[in-house]
Length: 110
Image (cartoon, rainbow, N blue to C red):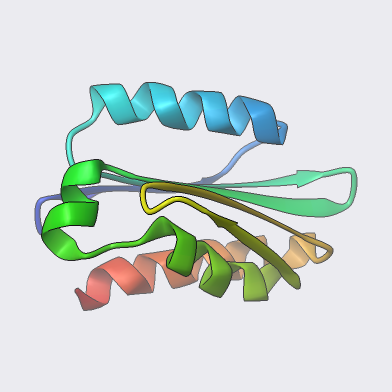
């Protein structure tokens, strides 16, 4: 969904963490101004992946490392990474919807 020149994608997927990472890097090369959040419930654990185009990191001061830590609270977990790519894991898969909604609100507020 395009928002203020940001191509925002947030979705629950049925993938493991490595597959989510692979798709994130693939989409980063294909979609300009990408802000991608993927969430998955894997073995009763929640996993989040966040990819932000480097142009958004630079121009909008987005930081995936900081954002993922905030989103991870929704899944009772923690995470980290780089400014453009970060992951989180948690023990509350029921919080995935809240995490994706929270990501939306971060973009909508900018």
